[in-house]
Image (cartoon, rainbow over all chains, first blue to last red; front, side, top):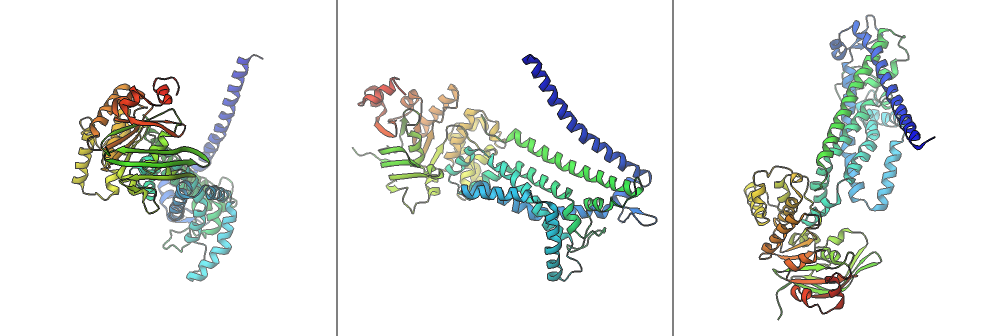
Length: 295
Length: 253
């Protein structure tokens, strides 16, 4: 076998494997749309997206996923409210302030946190947080927005921290030196040079963290309470899109309207996460063009 | 005989961990003069430069012995705030390192830190600093543009302007032209000549012609020691130490 032939063989083998991976993902998307689109023969997309009643098993059934969309965004929003400051600030601490030894310990702890199975967090929310919330605030149920947001925040923090930390680490040493040489303190250097320079990377981290929270299923299934209604307070239960799909798919008869409605919900979720990823991508591309201080 | 010496190093030893980078360096820098530090790579000249504004504080395991007196006060005394020292002693680095901000915001970085916030004051400072760094005419219409869009030579003059905006007494330059082309280098050298009327300049350079062209005093370092220090003319025409002569004539280094 000549060397040239080997090269060609290897090149094609890699191309094939890459192509298979993309093809499989593509087919999943095709399948999602094939199973979801038939719903719109029954109801209009407008009524599906903005209908406020989700009664898939009633007669006649109602397939309005507005409460589910609101549920998803509410828990995502509140989890980010907790996870973004904690995640970004711990990244700043790890990358700029912590002594070398502590830095390594913290990094491994964050990685460990990322590896925590979501069912464990959901269970924790269910048996620890929920009773505590219920008693402390005298609520009918502790499975609500606050509970799910807390658990989702714990899930999103590792994503936000590790990507932000990479962005902070990539800030060239020259910028820090310039800042110190101009009489800036450590805090001023962090606030005025390091964070602004890493801002695009940090935004990417935040958006990917949000995408992670939005797509998370098990935690919200176990801790969000599951009420398919537009919430009125922080202590109301919600039923995010992911929880609805996971909970109902087993019971929905094959190729029934309910089944198609759940796939259509999946399409909506897919669209939203795709949008998040595209935004994150666009931001990090902009970062590449202007970020480095070369001649 | 005694001239106006703004900075003195007295018996300075410096260690990176267990490695001794400077041994018993004693020298004084005259006010409003340009002093060049020359010597082969790793001889300790940049280390000494960074000691003068306490930039070496940022390195873990760095240790200083001896005294560095700035206007008669030891800057390594425990009660001295390094931030205060760095505001009086500016620094320009080997590689131009403007912040990825607008030209305007690069210049106003240090003044804002020391509490200048009025827009008219900042604008005046920007113009003054850029004029001193002979960059004003080139950038006066693009102050809002990112400093990253400037050429390397312009970026380096911007960095000088940025240091000047802090109104320092001394400017330390660490091989400021080694990343620049000959034309930009010539402009920076002209600039140094102009700036010495108002500032004391200490410059580290690998380029011996540069040291001869811009400086009044030259110190030659070799393996962490100050081998010879004196008027530039004497060092370059009639050095008293053999090692200095060998280095300057290119026999080693």
